[in-house]
Image (tube, protein in one colour):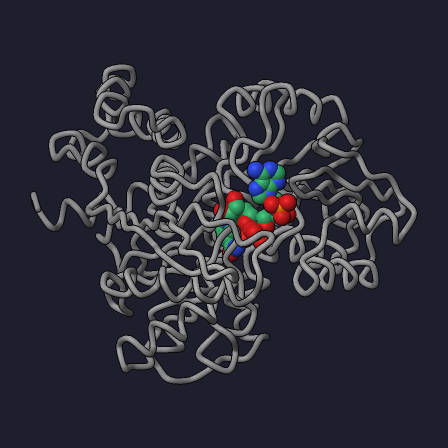
Length: 443
Ligand code: NDP
């Protein structure tokens, strides 16, 4: 198999979908050499088959704003691959959402879910609806209208969506309420639910905590720990806040957070008390991160990203392609030694090359941020069993899962004594799904 011919075909079949092309080439770079050593996958054309979603559902969402005017958005669900379990992946509500972005996210989710070792296939969905600036009632009406259509295609054994950018506890509550009403049943058709209606302890924290556990494994391999390490984080949403929380607990120094208007730099470090302020600011008041700078008297850099700040470890946790070639060079210059991806595909292909040639330890999102979907998988198990495990039990399972993911990266990514975490995650994620697809035959 030859990478250029393979990618030409992908681009021809999926014109204009640049984020999807990027996600595929990132996988293909590692998986094609592996396939060339294992011809059974080429004969069955497994990689080509994984790149084609099983189903793409696109629908209109009409809802009424507070002035009584009808509003129209687009809704999507990409059911990518269910070889190893029901389709599983979040819903994103953001004005930039389009089919290319959801296909990149759904494609990555196949490999990520495979790495967790839990039985979950890959999918993703969402809408170009922007919850920012909308009233609670408007968000509720949108979520209900969105679920009225989506509910036809999901279910606990079919497809189990969760949250992502713009979809947190509030949105999941409104959507699950509508699902339950339409189906006259109470089943685990969504994850990220509230604790009183089938949610799992620690699901809110899981992506951020898992990312820190992964970083800790990487440091452990070079006889280091998080204690005292200067950490820069981008974003100030679900993933960023709980990455910060666990880092603070582990004795690291968190010095930046951001949102789409800029970043705050707090050289003294964000402590538990300051983090409580951020949780209230972002999760309750839905304010801007610049307010933190005013409250605690530190710098706010409008319109900038935090990658020039001197640090040991970076946790990009906002959105895709937030680290380009120049940002990656800035991080190298600022002394960064480890990059652990909380957001999905936050580094451009050029950025990845900069990190590679500088010899940074770089963990890809499909491994490092898999803790969220892993605890979603545990939520599905708890729903099926009709019981709730304790936070301590979930935390222990999460740590074990993140360690297993780390071990798979090492097993499949070690060459000449060095670990290429991208290669490890991509090949290990591929093998499990590919072997199951071989077992099913051509179907
Ligand atoms: P949230 O909506 O909770 O937070 C997103 C944060 O990123 C906000 O601070 C937001 O700022 C910022 N942001 C979003 N888009 C942009 C942009 N284009 N430029 C600059 N900043 C931006 O989302 P999550 O924390 O849930 O998700 C963050 C990332 O983590 C995403 O890549 C997501 O796919 C990934 N992820 C999330 C998981 C989860 O469990 N939630 C699981 C695995 C991955 P603002 O408010 O100004 O828009």
